[in-house]
Length: 164
Image 1 (cartoon, rainbow, N blue to C red):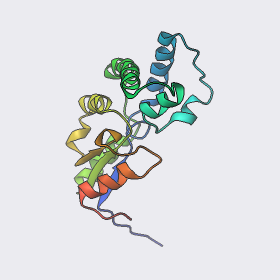
Image 2: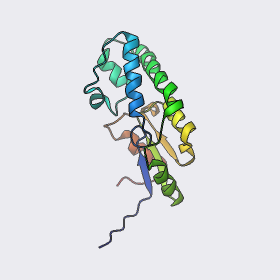
Image 3: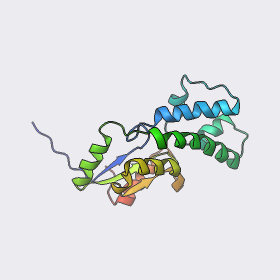
Image 4: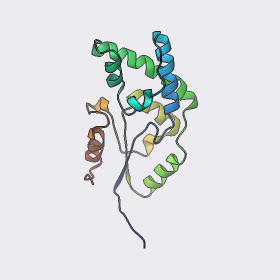
């Protein structure tokens, strides 16, 4: 028996779904912690922080810090990530081909990510993903990050497709 399902759009996460960035983020956090003179608890760090914004992570680490200080710390960490990503970031195997085929088939594509704009730009520079997508949403749009559905719902709105 064959099943046919029709889609109008595909929504993709970026980190760990389209790009193999998690090892680079891990290394950047380790370097950032070392620069701060803090121990890095590798065990469980990513399970506890995956999908969260830097501000959410840093608010947990430094509850008394203000937003400007957290933003500066986040930029330090992301600068470490981007320096390495510009040299060695790779697509997840099959991700580029999937996006190319979906785009060629006329599907609307969006990237829904907790990544900051500077990191998104690096991925676009390395792999030209921006030529394939019609929308990019992130917490920098004033939306809540995962696990909240906001970035996905906003992408659906921007693409003009109804939620399933």
